[in-house]
Length: 183
Image 1: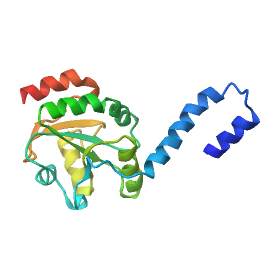
Image 2: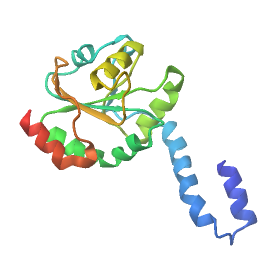
Image 3: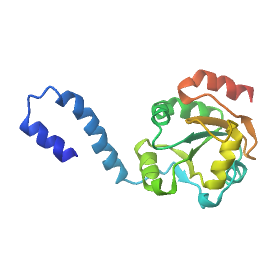
Image 4: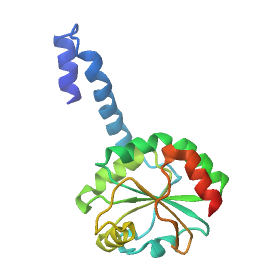
């Protein structure tokens, strides 16, 4: 695709469409460059996450303390839009001694895409991709007749006890700060 765009720019250098397509192609090129790089040392995939079936099992693998859970997927536009607020979120969570856990609800066959998105958005924190059992537990917790809406955020403790089932989004940082101070 980038080669096709470069050919288009060469063949039609005065095209009025170039300013519109260039930013989109630049993002795709950046994504592929990032996908070829390594992970940040602050990005941690929980060992044997494929065998963890509940939030409590995952929480037991993490250091003690509160956990902010971000349930997302690579195909979810609103999920990815929330990543734009990760800097403010990181500051708030660090100030309150809270760690972040990203749970992807992507399918098994999307594992490479999931890891590439983690790199592209530089999602520092702990990561798991939900297996069938964890996905079922999440749907039960969300409590909407077996479905969930993402992005979805949860505040829980290190035993997996849910402190706030529907915590505020990173884009709602002031509301989230209030919720954290209440728990």
